[in-house]
Length: 490
Image (cartoon, helix red, strand yellow):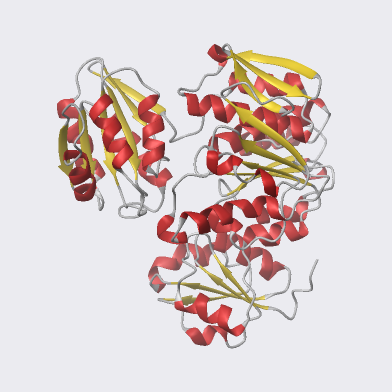
């Protein structure tokens, strides 16, 4: 571990990742400055969460003079690398890092990293569930939920054994781009634990260490507002493989050209996953005649039938196959992987059923922040669809979604910052068939419009295709608002 005592670290962005990194660095003796473009009063909760450590806050922007005594600059995930202060830091030769890179520098245990343009949250979560069951079977120190831990303490307190004599220590840590940044827990990890990380292209941009098991699910147009070109975006994703050794394993999506084109960069073992039979000599997880299967050398293992996968859509079957390939690479027990896969019901805000109202079923797919993910959601249903699209555009192509809408969707309600652009794209598409398009300013207004046109037997699908940043802090807040407002519909 580096000696942070004489290090001046500047962190840009006082959100989840920036706060976690500031806390960890300050506790390890670094001189930490946390700079955010928001006003002083908007940073009250961030300041409160860091009240127990020595962190200097700078609000209202990122003045270049902050670099004068800076040894390390850490932009948080959502901070553009085109900011003048970042470009000036690069010009001065100040190194860049982030919470995931620093975590990887000090983590004592085996790591699994999952990235991709789509499906990484679902896959990471399922791999985490497989890991929990596998470690429990091995007598590992399985993490308890907060409620379970409190109940455990209450039970101990009722006996003559003091609860402080027990330490609930998890063996499986799941986080990264989802949940808590794992830098919050790295000091409690041991060599026998395992860390499962979802990694975004933003995080990978700064990373120079790869996970022991690294998965790239797919590489399709996304975040071009940040990376500029598909080549730059694909190169950011490929960094998850770049620093692996011959002992490590890479898992790549065989059906996705963007992911499979990276196979030449694999330095260790290669596993694939596919909705088709795998090429001869290729190991991994695949679908054959409705049966999910696993192949490793001469060993062939049937896993489970497709009907036992509880998630909708081919893309989710691919996510489950990816999880099996990752779990196999990590050495999880087969029975535990099967149990986790059969019980898995998905993650919040990903094709999440909200309610049925007057015969129409409402689904929350707020996590779909690219048009391609909205297309996958549409393909998951056979019923007539009322599709809700909007938010903020990431400079991604919408034409393929417009074509699909004219083939499969009856009504579209657009909303938010990108609403006008989406409306023009859909109505201007010269395909076959017609579709009713309505426009709202906000998500709440869009819900009311969708309720007006929805009929019994319809699916009302929030799958925005754009980010939430025009109206909400993230997709989870947008999805929670959707659930609330749909539940309140009379």
